[in-house]
Image (cartoon, rainbow, N blue to C red; front, side, top):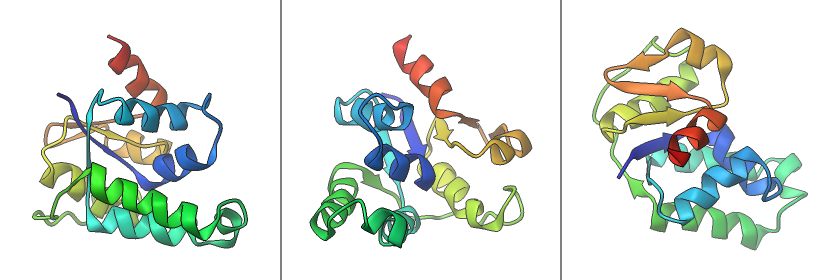
Amino acid sequence: MIRVTVDTNTLVSGVTTSTQSVNNQIIQTWRENKYTLILSEYILNEIQSTLLKPYFSSRLTTDQIIGTVMLFRQEAIITPINVNISGVASQAKDDPILATAISGKVDYLVTRDDAFRQKVPEYQGVKLISPPQFLEILKK
């Protein structure tokens, strides 16, 4: 099965958008066991802190936020970050996301961040792709 790390902005958007959105479909296909989701404590913490920001906390109940984080914690594979990556991504906060993907030996890192994908289209065998590109791969 394909091993995939999905970045925080894609997952959070998928949780808070309609079932027709690309980002929501990324989560749905994971729930249908079309791929293995690999996350890290870093990503889980980012998800939680993002969902607690006023924009999201005004749209989701506390129980929904807790449930979302618990779903990812219980159903995804949580990998320890065992590689040090610094200065590779377009922003320093994305280096741990890339380190998660490398540590988890994934095939793809799915991100909506165009600048990140343009700067690092592939790193140590991990291809960085957009959510629509990933859905196309899953269809094949």
